[in-house]
Length: 449
Image (cartoon, rainbow, N blue to C red):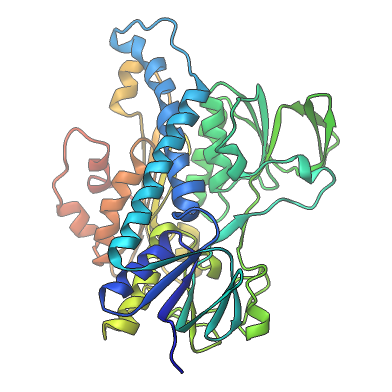
């Protein structure tokens, strides 16, 4: 059979665009289907707009610290609408860049919703498109808990586009998205209530990281309400009446659900074609991103493995390399760094202490807490936390964790060392860059007892 395309991608987010461009560079005919704007969650509804808002509200810290350095700044205020407008203008620019990249790569853009018809055919509106292989890269979508009044809750999608700041916002959850938006809204001047089921934020992260960040969020004025859930939400005039599981009530301008994201697989036609999915709707794939249907592949958040943009990009490019460049590639075993752009920031790579113990390692643990140099003049009491998790017999560094300014930038460099299998002795032999917070990672000497 003659197919219209060699590779047809459903979803033009970071993974879909990266895989399509890489494949097209090797000669195949490539098409990409997208029902919304080119760019996907990260560029348009996630990482990028969130980070732009964080840059905007971080100026509040600079203003607060200014007096300690001799500056007098009177009358400073945040125009939230201007910040949102600036963010939107940047997203429009990035959308144009992504469109241009696809066009220059020779990838055919198809507008509409793609639905699988058979292992080689996708229905897009009135058009049927055929391909030898299909790559699904439709990402994830925010979930809202099934409670009375759930229709009154917003998600991160709407939170990024709020035209007016609420005086008070209740955020439900304690993961990446919840703590990041708690920091954004608090710095912008909102009263923030963070409601979560556990006793600390960031379930799944290193325990000491969780404890340090939980305390830091409280110190920054976020109202932490652990051990509770939201039972219902109701309208009360222009406000939202939020009833918690302990019977307490909060009146707020907005209620945000940040309780997770689900793979965006509904209505794709997966069942009819025979693509195997899991309990949360995620597409089941092997280490090569192959689904249960030989001609269909899937990458990124839709597989619910490592739900991070750089991983989706790496997975998609690996598919292109494997299929079209005679360069078999899998990223499944890679060490994956990640950051939480909370306030303060978290950066982490490798194993947590708990995960390393569960894997059977005997450990040496090194930690430090210190007041950053800037804070000694500004008067800010917040402290930085750093941790190395080391396998005792081999002295290989298994994990590095940080809470504090520039954590993401610092841990990215540490990730190179861990990927190369660096030992604690090699960290020790590395000359520190002084004065910096980063040098603390190579000057840790005393094991935690």
